[in-house]
Image 1 (cartoon, rainbow, N blue to C red):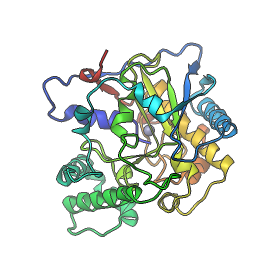
Image 2 (cartoon, rainbow, N blue to C red):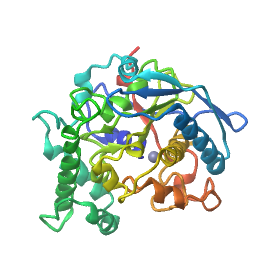
Image 3 (cartoon, rainbow, N blue to C red):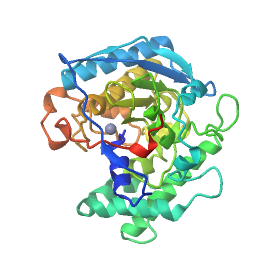
Length: 348
Ligand SMILES: [Zn+2]
């Protein structure tokens, strides 16, 4: 899914506090077209998780797709299994309140809906020339039709869909019968975004956690339609050799909750297919990490083209490395994505 570059670029344009300083993330050096990643498998025991055999498929598929599409040989270290609470203990000592000011509080009653609408409206206006196309894409997936036939009405309808689909996870039960999204912050994208601002010893974190949330910045149309679900993100890493780390949530691949299956266009995946599709999507994040590639939207041959909703099978079936070489479009030129990080969030 959409990596950090868009949210943070947008966030950088917003009037922030005086102590917020945004800097470009340097591109990593790749020697001999080879890269080695340290991998964690972070497990929340409240959800099913991929087996070791599935994880091996994820990594093998990511390696193959990265080789085919980027010409880079990936070497993965032995995945280290870690509990979600242990992983979050590695977060920087960034005050939760500082981060939560960017988060829409859908668990309590302090969420500011008008800020979500305003942010989506800003995004739609920035893409005014494509508004009709974006609407054509989104309209079949909106829960309620537009109250007014303009960008404001569209932003309102997107916010409505986002929140209704997000709130479902406060009701649907996990293995322990409590709601999939509980009162922890493990579902919050902003916390995953800043996970490696401290001393995170991994370059790739594969997790069974559902990452679904709403923020007052950078919510794109795709995410809003999915109810704020993130499949993966590439974010700044303070100590990592690549200057970024990526997480991949296997939840949308490996669960058959009704809202997930619906967003897949009704498809269910067996264990092997789920692992293969997740692996291909991990290669998408690796394209952000190693090459800072962007998103060639609607160029379906490209692994960097985000999947529509959660229909990973169609996305994977359309990939064709020969039709999407590096440099074949502006977004496929290394460095196309302008990743930034907030220096005030680096806590030593
Ligand atoms: Zn992406």
